[in-house]
Image (cartoon, rainbow, N blue to C red; front, side, top):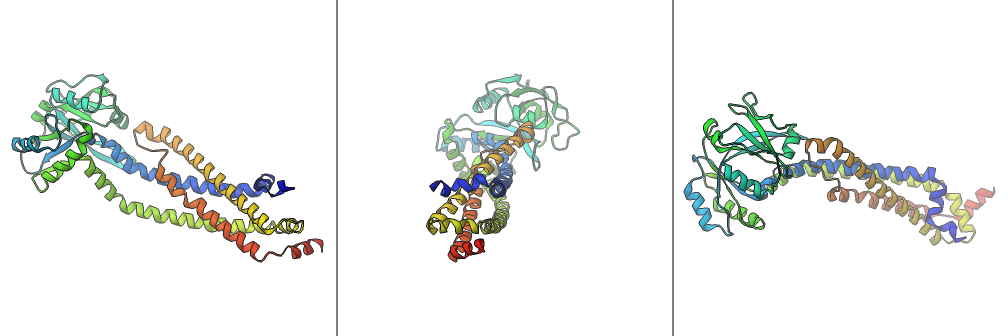
Length: 380
């Protein structure tokens, strides 16, 4: 007899009524995870594309012809951590693709030895092809860049008829570095001869990569207000967070509205669902089952529906995101975290609010429940 009161009894025997409730929760969780994960892929892509800047502090002159010797000496003498020899570089503008359009990217113009030092810093150990030759219109790019721009060895990275990636002569790709970092390199001597403006920038590396953030912040404070612009990864993160703050506030409103609508709809469905079971509850109470037993059973059913719906919704969302990642994101080197924790956290209000709505409906139903009148109506 106690088997009658197990929460799974009604759910299993009446799948036609319980499955729609689970389905609504699955769709709500799937929608929320999909929206949030795809939204998060935009700032995640920014951090992924420019992740190479974690390895150095960049200094670009504002009004000087270059980051001069005095500035470099000031950094060497005052740096709070041991540093590598400072790289003197130049840069040209290129562009990479993202899910929201083109983003600017720098082609670093370096001398031969500096290219290899920089590649070592990025843990580049394998190159398909070779390094660019001194003074030649040649470039080395990383594998994500090649995938993103659909480029291969022999294709031009910069060319005269490309306003977003210009060079007087076609700069052909001669090597593709096997690394997760996005990077583009070309010979300093070629840039010095054919590109304008003719100013030198600098890259500063901490000897211990773990000290790079400390060095970034020190240089940023040291040259605050000076005629150089500092590029550092922590500044990129601050700019990214600020850029998307309003967008995420709008997203919160959208998710709140969605949760409210789903909760209201589920409350109405649960109320109808419980109304159809009045005779069942009346007969069970007439047979000797207490109101507490019935409430415990109905709450168990509600918990089971909510948990199963949430788990299936998360599983469905992971399947959808894996499909999106493999078919859309990976072929273009776009970034997407299919196990995005914040996306999963956004779904927590769905089962919580639906369960609270179920508790409210159950309390309202049993507060004035009279099993005698139910049995009398059934016998009449």
